[in-house]
Amino acid sequence: MQMPKHSDEAKAYFRSLVPPWPSVEVRPMFGAVAAFVNGNMFAGLFGEDVGVKLDPAGLAELAAVPGSGHFGPAERPMGGFLSLPAELPDAEKTRWLERARDHVSTLPPKVRRVR
Image 1 (cartoon, helix red, strand yellow):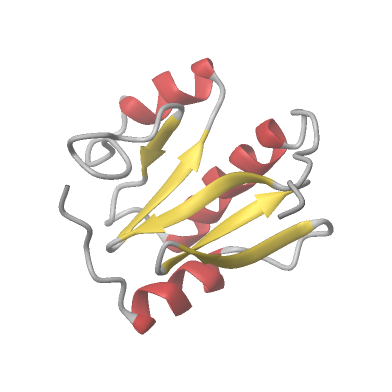
Image 2: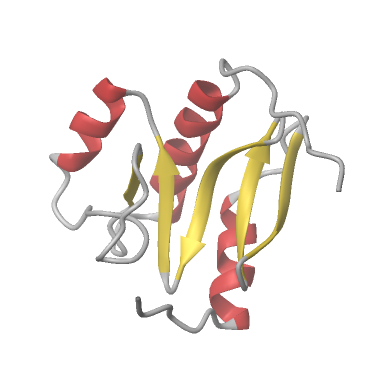
């Protein structure tokens, strides 16, 4: 499985798309960054791609946008996630992130395992 190099510029760009929403945390994940609400990931970075987790209706809507596609390694894309088209304006990307956050915030909080 080929894992892309995550540039500092891509990480900074991802962080710039995530407003300082209450209860949202952006943290490192597998050499990239991801955004979490209540411990559940709702958006992430894979290479240069920004991906969001959506409900089935949102996935269908985003899949119809030219330039969207699977998110994660081609051999094992992440279920429930799609990547945002690179040419989408930043404000529209942030709206998709907000929609993903709203969807994932309805899920039960993730309980961290004690190591």
